[in-house]
Length: 303
Image (cartoon, rainbow, N blue to C red; front, side, top):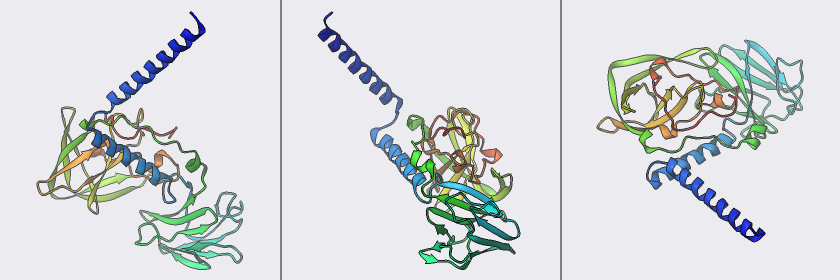
């Protein structure tokens, strides 16, 4: 066999491999083209939000405040030790009667909304307008978790933002887009929602979403958030192919007939899948689905 024929043969083999791989890839996606593209666009927007300044990839610290004074900065003698790119002694945060005040040391440039800060009362993340302080590439604010106050620290130049390669997902399959019926409870029900830091928060739900999947009747208790329902659910892929502590999903509120769409192709990882500095809610026990939901985002990295 001449070298020329060998080159031609290898070329055709390469073309055939590419063809079969592309065909196999197309067969994995199940649904009409418009729907598949809409899910891909949704996921692209999700990645953009993760990498944004208010996304979850730039978290670099979470520090719980003690009652009274909490000095902070990069020096080791602070109560709260920030990363090395922070000033050594930034100031003090004072927690008193469930309110947090920050006093900044002279000569340290800390800003909020482009205004330099000397002393300020900090509104936490449950307030209408959270106070965000900044110094260089660092951003921080107060979080309130069931009366426990902490400092959430971000670095907009965090390595994870720069190195992030995306999240693996299951192939889009329209069978995981199901119609659910909202069934109201006779009276609102209080449910316990645990979180990753070990505390439990109670929320009130007015009913449940009931739907059919894989020949089974399933239900989920949704939490109301504005014009949407927020679902925290677990399934039998958790800990193997998907994040071990469950996934999140949003749906629209039911229409006049009590129906809404639950699309598991939009199931996504909670922030704790990417960072140890988040305080994610965990699925309530009634939101465990006893089947494998092979749709949406798979687990990320080693979390």
